[in-house]
Structures are given as structure tokens and as C-alpha cells.
Image 1 (tube, rainbow, N blue to C red):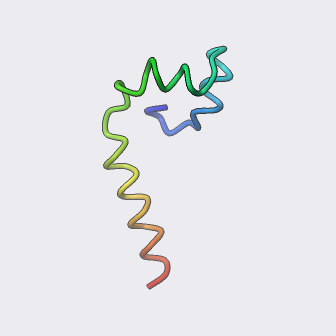
Image 2: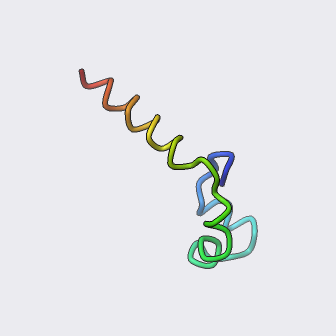
Length: 48
């Protein structure tokens, strides 16, 4: 997930549900808030 792969894909490959995956590994998602912010700002910039 840190690489930007969709959590449903990661869960499927790991043999877990998305809920289990997030419960176990969400605390290891370093820097994702900053990346999400950048993506949101880039998208909003397209509307200017």
C-alpha cells in the first residue's frame, strides 16, 4: 500500500479482507497523508 497499490488488490494478494489488512497494517502507512494531499491539490488545480 505504501507503493500506492489499491488496498483491495493488496488484501487479495495477501489472502486477507480489506478490513483485516487495514487493522493489521494501517499503522505502517508512512507518508500517505502527504501523498494524498498532493494528489488532491493536483486534481483541484485542474479546475482552475
